[in-house]
Image 1: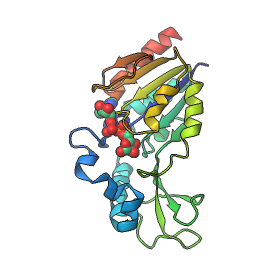
Image 2: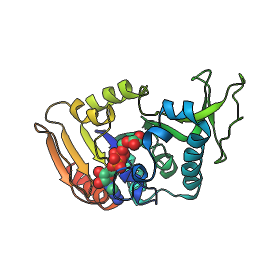
Image 3: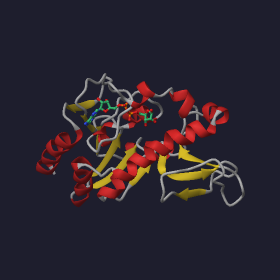
Image 4: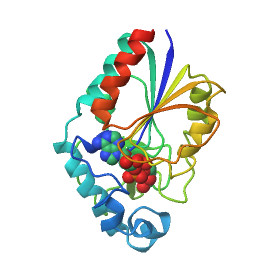
Length: 229
Ligand code: APR
């Protein structure tokens, strides 16, 4: 089976009602990213950071995967599909995708501040000061904050280099190292970008920009790929 590697961003979950970050009215218009999504913000006021993620986690418990998530899961019937997502929601998994690599962490998980290998599933939306790991240290959101390393990036780069087709959906390609994955495809690899907005696409790539929302764009791409397959 051909290997499809799919990089998704916030636009993938927009049709599920989850705000993107940099569109009009996006998350970073409402919050100061360094206050709520950085180690400095956590050190200064952990309760503000916990509340920021509690609100997003609460919304996620009420959201559903959209048609685009289900179409990507369906593509597993025709291709070896590896999703690499910048999103911290679990909508790809809930739609049935079986290979999902989270670059920026997972909203429904918490991590020990004493031992980062201690990661816990959260079946409730609220994480509070005083919620501790088995070693007695405060739990934090299992999210990669600005300024923190991205542990999964090497694994992601290896997967992109093996891609027969690379698909990028709903990301402004402005945050590194995730955005740099575009340059990891082998020369000549077909790249499809699905995004209704304008994107500054680097030269030298074999890129097709499907200027549509995720669900419509994936529908169009699915018929292209299956007809070619
Ligand atoms: N379908 C597809 N794409 C969409 C849709 C939609 N319905 N709506 C918006 N988009 C596109 C926008 O045009 C934009 O290119 O999704 C992209 C969203 O970009 P950002 O808001 O910057 O989100 P993202 O690229 O995922 O941000 C990367 O930044 O804040 C950090 O860690 C956070 O993972 C996030 C990272």
